[in-house]
Length: 386
Image (tube, rainbow, N blue to C red; front, top):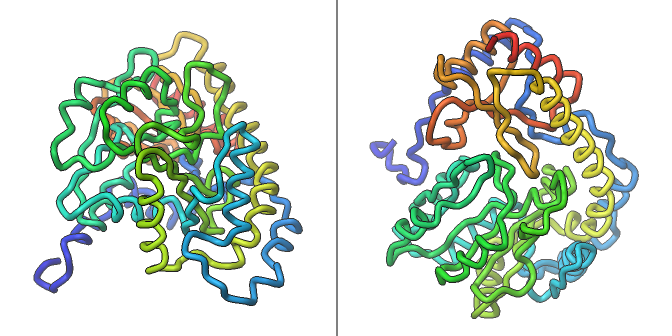
């Protein structure tokens, strides 16, 4: 890579992993693969309010270009309204509109970090952080989540990970793939660390049951500099619309917003049509979200029902989100389990190491999978493991 004069930001090993190679071969042979990893709601068989969405994108003002670096006022007011419906006051002045949550991370990393600085991210979690940080010449350090029947932050390990170069602490609430929410007691301890917080809340609307001990959102004003990230991709099941946002609060948040506005003004990446459509898209997204909630809950219930009989498979506790984690016997590595299931049973699952699980053997399944496929895939998994 370097011999061609390209930057180290893109020096990633792009060779396909064994699971990807096997899947490509299966598909070339026209095998009917039961995909238990589907995370794209537009491919998962949900019914979208088509007319409402397409009409929203046909706003007459979309033909005119009046860029506002922080986002068009109607879009920021729509975000404010989204939080108001959840009992949280978010003034439009605290909102920055971005093209995605990934771009929101990039903006906040640019704002807080110099090259070589560090951000702390949870482990296990989504594998995108390494790439997003590398693009900004920032280093990722992991802090562990521990499981003892429920997930929680390992605070001694978190404190030990903080160095003079630590610029931000990422919380994913609820986390992906563990589905665990931040608890109030944990938030109190995190606030005492004095590190700026990035709270990724894209799955916050997908809780399986209420729980008074959890933090629903950090969008209300906080005592520590806090950036809340969310967007249409998950909460409205509309990843193709490319709109996310940042809500800032805490000490110096006005100055932070000025910095984010300057960054946003450099890129001006968010399309006018989607910003003008945002009030309608959030409304339409409620219908899609309800369908996703219904399916994820049904699949979780089905999973617990199938495993109620004494089973070698253990379901890890999950509070929300789109994924569930199975602990399977260590008689094989999780990669071998995943490869065997695909090779012999035509079932696609993700091994835990895709999400940096520290030990063996875990398999991650998408609860958004169409229920008939989910049931058949689960039955094949159980038969293989038994």
